[in-house]
Image 1 (cartoon, rainbow, N blue to C red):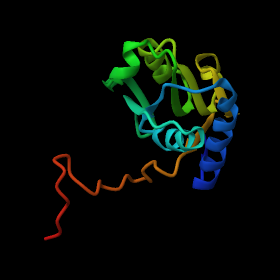
Image 2 (image 1 turned 90 degrees about the vertical axis):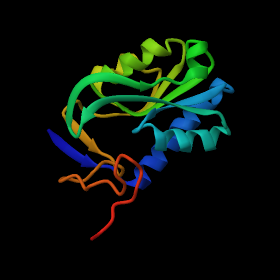
Image 3 (image 1 turned 30 degrees about the vertical axis):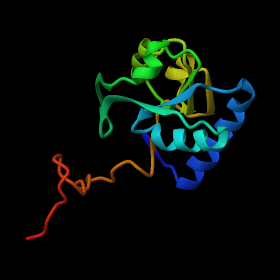
Image 4 (image 1 turned 45 degrees about the vertical axis):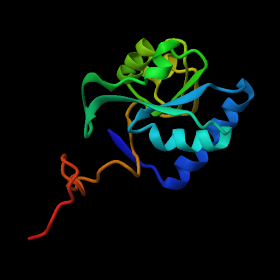
Length: 163
């Protein structure tokens, strides 16, 4: 697998391009950001489209670079009530489509937009900015660097203390 290190500049530029592609579709009720990868692009698109209602859909499927079972951790309540009708769902990337299928199941009527799409996921999204070869792994600036650095805070929320 080839790796490509994405820069903050690339992400910002391409998320703004996504917003320009979505603007002609009219106003959205709100945005559902797929956490965690979709948080940054969703914030940029929300700013560009002047959308202030943002919810998150927390789905876990990757452990570093290995995809495991898909687990919905936190569904977006307001968007689920309408099956996503009028909502814009945003993620950074559609790869194999596992996460996208789970998101579509929850919000079948949402407009699903991603910044980057791989061939196995093309059919699962409505809008994407750039096609990426299936054998390319995108390393996003928010991804942990190998070896993964320990979190700044432990799971209880208290800051790590040096002794």
